[in-house]
Amino acid sequence: MGSFHPRPLAHRERALLDGALESLGPDAPRWRDQAARAVVVRVCECGCGTIDFGYPGEENPGVGAGVTVLADGIYEEGGLPFDVLLFAMEGRLSSLEIVPPARDSPKTYPESGRVKWLPGPHGT
Ligand SMILES: [Zn+2]
Image 1 (tube, rainbow, N blue to C red):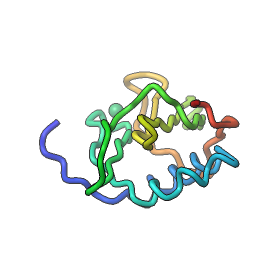
Image 2: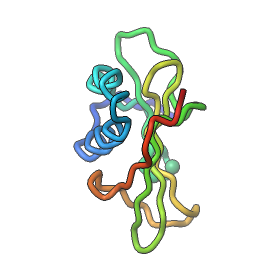
Image 3: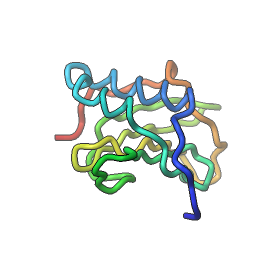
Image 4: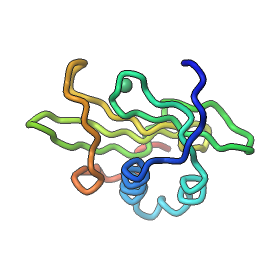
């Protein structure tokens, strides 16, 4: 993993996270505070755009893709379907994952406005 210095979310990452939270409808407000405090603690090295969240100075459960998919979206690029998954772990937003249709798919980052979010929340 190397030494990755936590950084703020980039504009496009923040926009995508906001879109994911919006898809949660009435469940969205309970996540907004921590979403505002979240920083990026890991970026997937394959270039897919997946990021993991951390919360500096706070008691911090594990980060990364967890078992709870909070939000689930789809977008198309070049006729290919990409998935966007927002994970939570132990009550924390933990990862925003971009899932390309295949390993050698072009690396593109979804524009928030183009993602079709499935009605959520998905986790329990
Ligand atoms: Zn990746």
